Amino acid sequence: MDASETGKLIAAKRKEKRLIQKELAERLKVTDKAVSKWETGRGMPDVSVLEELSRELEISVSEILNGKEVERDMLPETADKIIVDTMKSSKRKVNKKRLMAIGAGVAAAVLMIFLLTFLYFLSQTMNPKDTESLEESINGYISFRHYEERAKILETRNEQGLLLVLYNHGGFNGIILYEESSVFPGRVQKNAMMVTQPEHSGRLGCSAYSYENKTVVMLWGEDLPEEARYYSVEFFGMEQFFEIENTEMLLDVYIYPGHDDTFHKKLLNKDKKPLYDDFGEKTEENRT
Image (cartoon, rainbow, N blue to C red; front, side, top):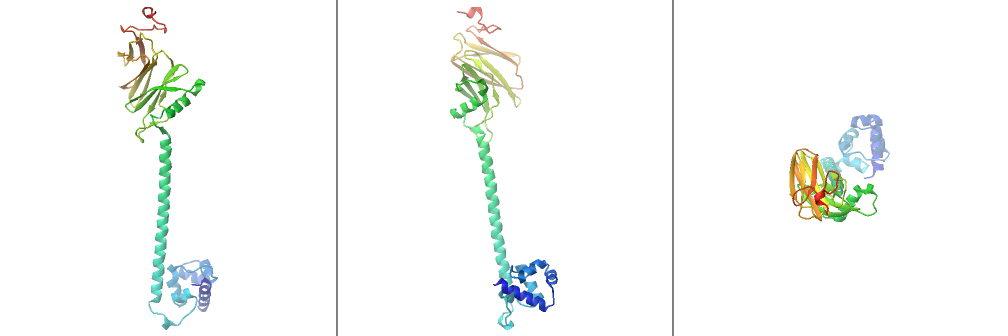
């Protein structure tokens, strides 16, 4: 097919019919600019208008495509229909391929968005067994303390979807509470649920955190006094006693239904008597 020859033929036949470009365009339901493009060889008629164009100009589709008139008896009666059907079929195949390409592109874009979203949420979690990541997180939370020494993890404890981490920083001990990820099993959220105020080594630390209609009570300590054999916690109006198995390292957690963040804790001797008075000094009977 030669677009230039086709254009010349269309222009010649249009003029024979004493039609201007606008009139032919209106009959074909296209713009006069489209007709102008055909006649100047800058475009070819779309397959959807070929049959109507051949009727208006009284020439065959074959002649339009070839750009010249041929003897009528040289063309089978069904030639035009075969040509148009073939072109329409080819166009449908092209459109199908185009749709498939668009579909593949959309699917790839959706997959990429999903992958980026997945990686983003994964980056907001960490492996609780990765000590380096945990210590990096802890040091980020306690950077306000301005110690050159970095925090070190002393002990961890998993309890009902929570991870408690006992750390030491500059002679002080504290607790950071992390929540297990609901999306990535076995990992915890990087954003800590709670960071406790550090206590001096040798003292019993205690803190409570309420969430989801539950209260988490945490007790911790490092290098507790040798005389310490028990500790008590008064919570929800009840005092409970717990034995200390290891004075070098203590990390306990208790989860109660309801909300109550008021508590009292005491270190006790073997007779379950307080080791310290209300001013934090050892009681007379426990002084050596």
